[in-house]
Length: 267
Length: 278
Ligand SMILES: Nc1ncnc2c1ncn2[C@@H]1O[C@H](COP(=O)(O)OP(=O)(O)OP(=O)(O)O)[C@@H](O)[C@H]1O
Ligand SMILES: [Mg+2]
Image (cartoon, rainbow over all chains, first blue to last red; front, side):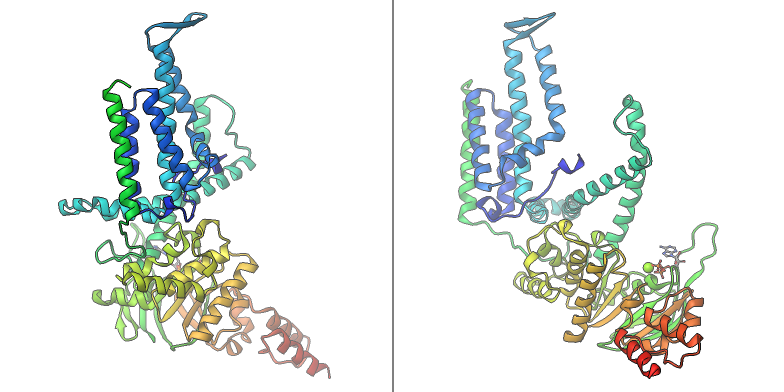
């Protein structure tokens, strides 16, 4: 069950999407999110869908992996959609029992689902095609002007890289602990909300203890490999913008502008 | 290569407890190019000693010199850590990146090595542990033995002079253990890498040049495997096992057979017994 969590996973490959500079991909993702929040009509959502589909095709990630990424959040998506359906009023569409469903509500709910799903798929596409080290390198470089203000940019990037590195390890560990507790008769599936939350304690406590031990050992291992902060570090992959990066960025900018203009025109 | 003089170490006192010395008056000299095994049961101070070698811990008394550089001096610390490559027990907790080659590149990146040279060092280090084919793999999907070889490559990329391996095979299956040990022996043989292997497994010690046995923070035995293992009673008193062959020879001697105790290898042991029977 926990194996389904693909958050922050990276699928190595050698497509255009993999070869782009991580900074390009970060900026494109930001533009994509901005555009997504400006999209207000089926036409503009169509543009967004086209954008997403192109990116997926180029990256060869496969829709299965992307849809899998949605699994842990489908509950939130359905929940917000249902809330929208119930609370938004306008022109009545159908009446089922006591509830009247309005045209506007359906529209908002559909857009809401599209927006959240596309948001998640877009950002997952970023982590699927970019190794965490490259991703955080890109982030560090993009944010490096903030270093002048003494913001701990390198430290944040390193923390993010390590967090992404340990997600699979900790998920695996949680699975193990759960099996161990189940073997001792723990029950995670039945009972009320409170009971289920209580059942999580015997999982969380060992998980936390082990996470602290891991952190301690990792820190020692990093020190032994001469880590002493961001000062004077070099990189295996030197970040370099190439022609393809400028092209992709320009394309993303045009698409974002188009969606914003479409929104202004009421489309 | 490594010079340890009257080394004493006590962990910082926990409230309400006396700070007991974990290492007491340790004197050792590790030769360049040698393969030294360190034995000792749980809590005898092996890991503490290893951490003192790479300046993760600093001596409470005495000193540790790596190529003449004292770990007690702040300015030497980075150079000492570069020269002393440490590998620990749990491979998961020492791998930093999600891609093998990026993890191996971590140390040279920290050292400020230029990009092209990092590339060369990474390829070299991966070749040295026989993991070139896994350059772009995700470490968490590899087997334990493979992960541990990546961890070794990760320190080799610093171009160290000594490899200190703290129970690196403890979490591995027999196959993984064999993989890792073969790699380490090959590095020692072919590149003249100085190796310090901390272990609980007697079978890993037979091929070492030198065996050091520790007990309660002191060195209690020191010599070649052929000198140390025949001291069966002493080793048992320290709750350490002896290799199977020595155990057999020891039992045979107890029933009056005149066989030597220092035939460590299986073939050697068999020869010794045949010779007696003839
Ligand atoms: N961080 C620490 N703080 C306080 N005491 C410690 C710490 N780490 C280890 N010790 C103590 O120091 C002693 C030696 O520990 P050390 O880890 O060096 O032993 P070891 O020989 O490596 O044992 P093992 O075979 O279990 O790995 C033990 O008594 C242990 O309790
Ligand atoms: Mg230890």
